Structure formats: C-alpha cells, structure tokens
Image (cartoon, rainbow, N blue to C red; front, side, top):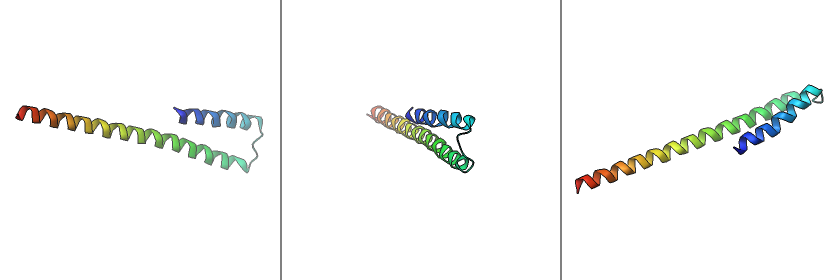
Length: 74
C-alpha cells in the first residue's frame, strides 16, 4: 500500500511538471529512469509478498495434512 502511495506522490507532480514544461530535456531520461525504478520496486514488493504468502499457505497445508495423517494412524 505504501508503495502505491509513493508512486502517486512521485507520478502526479512529475506529470504536472512535464505538462507545464518545467522539466528540461536532459532531465527527462532521469525522470523516466527514476519512475521505472520506482515501478520496479513496487512490482518486486508485490511479487515478494505473494511468494511469501504462498510459501506460508503451502507450509500450513503440509503441516495440517501431516497432523491429520498422524491422528488417523493413532
């Protein structure tokens, strides 16, 4: 959630300054690079959180099935 807020706080002023013409030609590639890095960071964060969630979910399923198997064996 905070990644999206940071992206909005970066993107909206950047678009505003671009429309007003306050961004010089040499600054445009840097602005694009910084925006791309920010987007990559947000995407990487989402992928990492999804991976951790899936690993935790899988470990809960495996642990639960092991416990159920042991209860049936008794």
